[in-house]
Length: 87
Image (tube, rainbow, N blue to C red; front, side, top):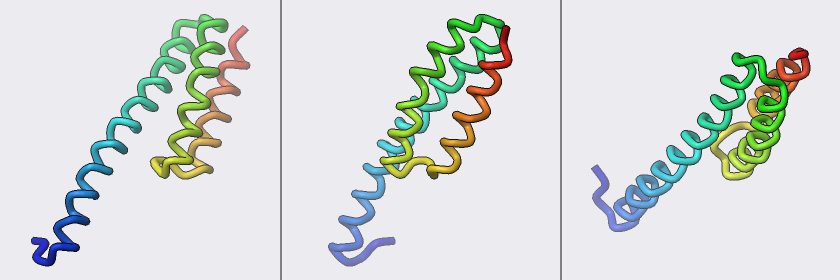
C-alpha cells in the first residue's frame, strides 16, 4: 500500500487514468464490432462506413497510448481487406 504522499497521489492518478483508458478501449471495441457485424451481414456500404468511422478512433487510441501503433495498423489493414473482399 502507498505510504508517502507522492505514492498516494500516484495511486489516485493511476486509478483515474485506468478508468479513462478502459472507457476508450471499450469505445474502440464497439466501433470494431460494428465493422465486424456489417461484414458478417454482407452489406459493403455499411461496412465501408463503419470502417471509415473506426479508423480515426483506433488511431486516437494509439496517440493516447491505449494501443500500439502496429496493432492498430494491423487491425485496420485486416478489416479493410475483408471489406474490400465483399462484392
